[in-house]
Length: 110
Length: 120
Image (cartoon, rainbow over all chains, first blue to last red; front, top):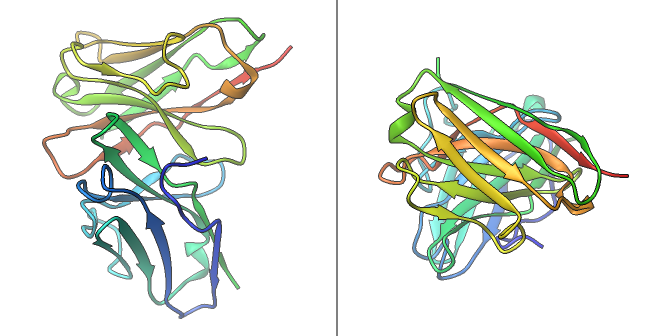
């Protein structure tokens, strides 16, 4: 059971906008920044969003992140077939000194 | 190019031991905190250990505390994970990931992973 809660799946059609939620608590998302990772099958996770809403160089602006209270969201606009992947949220938990992750959301482009 | 390469995974019997290594290159390894994160088949990510740059602060989750030991050699740009008393539930792909807690980037670079299978 993951500390952060994500929906197990999400889907959309090409061109649509989809959002993926990530719910935590006052000891992690509530006081720490959230990162999002994208993972294609058989490969390592790769940083997609850091510090709640910042994109590393090379990540298109179709990807955006936000945070409010103890929840965060990842939004993908102009959905493309190559966006099919697993998406994971993560945050440091200050109460127990651990990195906590969501269970991952599998995004399907219909 | 910034790179992390894990090695040392394999098949081990329950109760056995394994030592994973992670070789870093392309960045100032001694200034970064390092972590191990694992992913069981079909499951999400689970963080399993942290070591700061000077090796004086180390954290583990309860699931591996007392069985796993993280260490590093800054002269060789290596971080290790010694895993003892392995259980079937430790079966996973193990990734090393770097972190600079003073920066906003979080776990920003990950290795490709090494697979550990615990089975008789």
